[in-house]
Length: 602
Image (cartoon, rainbow, N blue to C red):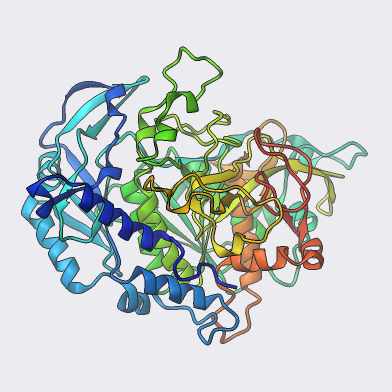
């Protein structure tokens, strides 16, 4: 079964078409020399108030994404890797083989680097496939590179910097995105954290157990095989900031649960930045402890950490993972950004963005004029991961049938009524994970499931823009079609669109249900789809650990998940079908639904 057939519009072909559109749209003689990158500009910036100029000496990091020379061939190769009838079936590439076969040519990257050098910016990072660069320098140098002016702005109480027009670059360069020109948009974490409910450790009761679940209880409820605990498998986490405290908390968690102390490695991108932010510690605690809790036999956890939640930085850390020859086959990302098209007029109408039903509010955020700037570059990298046989798990979000569209990035439980999805969970090359509320029948380690229903704020919907991958075709209830492609063109209008999530696991309800963790040395409780995703990453590590020695493994998890789920008998054996609850616009149903995907694992 193929992920994508040759000819379908994927990230590679989309990037190519965006370049063609941009070239044809550039007016006059200037189009022969420079072309605009229209998706790298806040086109609704007029809603914000300009408050001044950016200091010419302000230090900045920007990312440059470079298109691959043969996207059609890359798509065809990827399809063959997941076609059981192909001689290439599961013959996954190493990072070096990928770079040689599909990476940016050395001539192209030399031309890109000459362009960068002309502005005085320094290349702080370059991916192995030569398709992503992180540049460092001053605001003046960034303006010189992109032919824009950077200003300071204020909107809805938030101050930020932004470029006043689309960046323009030499027309002959295969660059398709410049990330980091505005500080308004960035990833947000999904975690919720609170005090662990004491009921977890209370005596058994006939009443439902509503406290935080322990790893041992989840092993039993989700029917995890005791003989397979992730032996020989490593798992990666995408995050940012400082790591000493969260590693210490992981070791305390291991001690409390009687687990072997799992080794932790940290990989920084770029290496010369400061990694001192601790605001995300709650998130990384949930990720690290959920993964090891569900797979206590893994060999290590590897933290691919950026210096901030900026698109520029986190895309760089993803590039480091997919290009790491010894990198783990699994990565978790409990992070997200709202999916929005830069050119689709439907989504730029204020009426499409009601906030609490108040028509007098300025409902359309500035960001709605711009697709999150990480999406095209991140999609290119995640496709590489699939070609290498790796799996990227991502939280589907905590905003129900909408997305966290109001910036600065909110980390809260809300449903804004905007029927969109969260990126990167909506990528065809990621496993999007939704959330459930789980009541057990006792507080013992051997507790069973009493009730599991869809969490009201489990992120889930159909993307209006991203064409569904082949593996999502032929799935009952997965039937919504696209409005346009991400560039605003009607090329895929009427075609099946990507549905999110793919699967689900415990998220809790924030109030009385979650997962027991250690935070700052003290017992606490974690929840949200920030919990659901790493739980699945840990459970998938158990699966990966069963791959026969000498094989290349099972590859991208969604290929296996959908193949199993399309077989009614195997589906009943492998999944608990969540049929109760909703996330706003979407109700849980028999089989697939836009709240919990195929459900939770057995």
